[in-house]
Image (tube, rainbow, N blue to C red; front, side, top):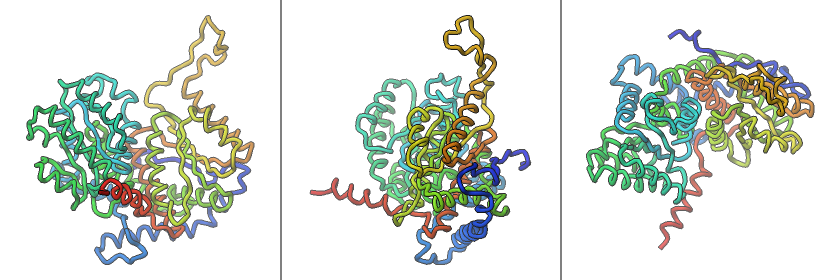
Amino acid sequence: MNESAIPPITYDPAGVLIRETGLSAADLAWLGPRLEAARNEVLDDLALWHSGEPVPKEKQPLDAGFIDLPERLLDQYRAKGDQSELGRILATGNRLAGQVDRVVVLGIGGSYMGARALFEALCHPYHNELPRTHRSMRPRIYFAGNNADNDAAVGLMELLACQSQERWGIIVISKSGSTLETAVALRVFLDHLAQSCGGNVDKVHELVIPITGVKSRLRSLATAMGCTEIFPIPEGVGGRFSILSAVGLLPAAVLGIDVVKLLEGAALTNKRFCNSSSGQNPVLDYVGVCRLMETRRGATTRVLSTWGDRMEAVGLWYDQLLAESLGKNGQGALPLTVVNTRDLHSRGQQHQEGRRDKLITNLVVEKTRHAPIEIKPSTMNQDLLNELAGKTLPDVLRAALAGTNRAYADDRRPTADLRLPRLDEWSLGQLFQMLMLATAVEGRLVGTNPYGQPGVEAYKTHMNEYLRAK
């Protein structure tokens, strides 16, 4: 593949901090040596993970396996084709897409948020409402098992029952198999699937695809059931870092998303991360901006301001990544996703005139997928829009972005921009890998282990205590 054909995420190291914030490119250069040291520690973590040597206590858990996962999957695919893990993912995704018209993805946290982000960003915005022929013969997709909401579960089962003439399947994702919300949902939806298959156990087992850890309750259950395909969540890859494993790739393959290009984009980010110095390295510069704004300007809230509806789930995925990785020991910035221009009419007031504790990072897609919709002149000009005739919806969004940045700048409220050349697999592969690497680097920079989530485990323990009490 010609890497020069992959448009990189663009940014301007000297311009990512706008005027009147009190920060400059010189500040970023000052932090550069520490950023590069943190980058080297992250790469040392990867080498340690590959070595199989004992991991020091202060490094445990060490889930650095996500870093070179794109290259490992691609290399194996190029060498072994259909016999590789990626080849199996593609084949199974196509098989399931041909067998069913609806897929229910069961998972919580990192076990579903990445798949949802890929779905919303890359599929038709009304995918589930389209007839099958307009979905490239791909199934509708639903996400469940991420809450214990009785009525939501009933509603989905009623929907599936209403379409009794259409077969449906389950992708269930859980590394341990012991996360209660997903485990309970699987039992409930398995029973519903068995009914829809007329009790035919063989049909049920070929329509259930588990993605799980090497040693887990879910793997034991899937083996006992005789599921025809079981995919691994790799060792050394934590849930919120697993989007570029089968966790995100299999649902994407079912939907016809080009997972090879997704991984190639991620591999390009890895190359820049490893070989570029601070000032020319998107990962390090992003971390540098965030840290400087937090430590020097008290920007403890990081707003990811997505410009366009289809990136909201990407932001929610990042919320989890940042919160679970760095929200430890009384530290960690608060992540918050907004969608503009929608949320300019809700949170925008607070961002413009509220507490000065925010860094707003605009996530912008430069080019629309479809031809721009133009505002046309009308003989009925009561809305006074004729003077905008010839302008397009992208023009309106660009003007809103420029106007918002200017309004914030006039009041000395900091913003930064991340721009994707277009919303496709290459760009998203770069973005996902960039944000995962940035999170790991920031953890090492501030002395917080970015892996593991002990705070999440606490609620699970107490929930089980209450449920199992005699």
